[in-house]
Image (tube, rainbow, N blue to C red):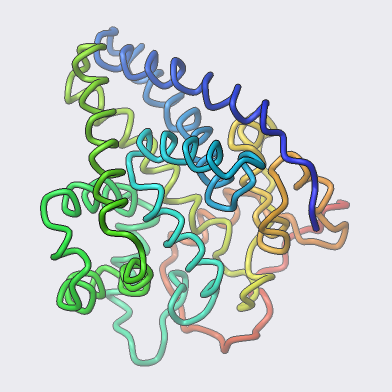
Amino acid sequence: MTAPIPARLNLLLLAASLPLTWGLLWLASHGTFPLRATAALLFAFVAHLPFSLLHEAVHGVFSPSRTVNDAAGTLAAAMFPTSFTVQRAAHMGHHERNRTDLDLYDYCLPHQSRLLRNVWLYAGNLLGFYWWCVPLNSLMFLAAPWLVTSAWFREGPGKALGFGPYLADLAGASKRRIWLECLLAVVYQSGLFLVLQLTPGGWVLCHAAFALHWSALQYVDHAFSARDIVNGAWNLRVWAPVRWIALNYHLHLAHHRNPSLPWNHLPGAVEPADPRPTFWEIYFRLWRGTRPAPPMGAEATIRPAVSGR
């Protein structure tokens, strides 16, 4: 399915996200305690706007111009902060492996340690550790690209943390481009500290709040869905303003069925018979821990209401 790309609107939203995130980072660094807490809470949601635009650029639907698309994706990646090339490789790999044994966090396979799988689930998805791994990976790549792309790191620390397949995705990517994009991310973030006089505490507070939101959402929109590469996702029901600022990212089943469909067309791609669990319904169920994995091809293990109810 193809549809017109809202390129001008995307550029406007990306431009608007810059001062919005800057202002919240400044408040978290210089405001009173209530203002700092409020800024961090808002940042947890507002920062998803540039990430969602990064997601559009990864799929090539930020702009019909490849130059504009990739330039916008590179800027949005620096705001995250990460490399656009790394994000594109990892995310496209996710679409290829979705709900397979290599992309599964809500279940435990027979040969796996349930304790380790629960560490991945709780620390990674629910407590935000997965987001912290992204900027850490950028710093590591900047300092030692040969280490991050080595077989030892992929099969050792990377595999232990559940990132083995994603590190393998980088094998064919341009190391020079990734290094330059990681450098841009560091320059962008360092520039914010200098220009806005941010404090480490304010920056960490905002990004810790965002890490909790982002890391959870990355798997809430898949957990306990059908073990199917295309249909293994949910169209989540959330408060409309939250969905709007995330550019319909919560309509994830519609996205997986139509990866090239721009965000503004996703609501029309939701099928009436699609189950519509709430974010919290899946989120709280994840806190019960992993459980034995059903076979590939199994249906969803929960039966939420459909979209028409």
